Image (cartoon, rainbow, N blue to C red; front, top):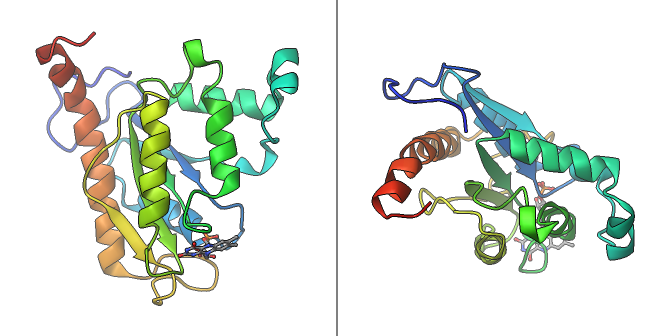
Length: 207
Ligand SMILES: Cc1cc2nc3c(=O)[nH]c(=O)nc-3n(C[C@H](O)[C@H](O)[C@H](O)COP(=O)(O)O)c2cc1C
């Protein structure tokens, strides 16, 4: 974790600032969820850097491959997660749950279990989908996954976007100003929460 002590509220400009790894649950070029993450980068406060990760090169999880050594794309994912102060995941909903590409990447990221990059890594979620649930099911299932991986989750604010409501243009760029403000609030809440967590865990007596 970077040194962020003695900072005025809202500024994160010491020693490389605050780094968020943004992971979209869709590979599409015009993905609305990638659009949400681009918007997060645009509205992030000064000193907060958001790196977008593309899951397209992550192979299917295979224990035999793992036992031979991690593929390069998986090592890149592990390193990007370790470098980050927090993760921001934007997911669509597929058949009432998490898209396979995202679950597969999280399965790789959770390995090896004894020293997983996801362990203790703070996470915030958001999502856009065409259907009525607006990714409520996918986000609920992701919460279960991150519970398993030992990754603490920001509980609020929740950002659930209807992809069918004209919030995005055809290239997946976010147009809706209310949603943009929700995304800004989520990024700010994630940064503020991660800054106070060391104090919270110390008070609770957790190492
Ligand atoms: C295989 C598949 C299953 C889907 N299932 C759901 C679903 O259960 N609920 C829903 O709201 N949308 C569903 N959709 C629609 C996606 O949510 C929609 O395509 C979304 O915009 C994709 O996100 P993206 O723009 O980031 O690629 C499904 C799409 C696909 C391809």
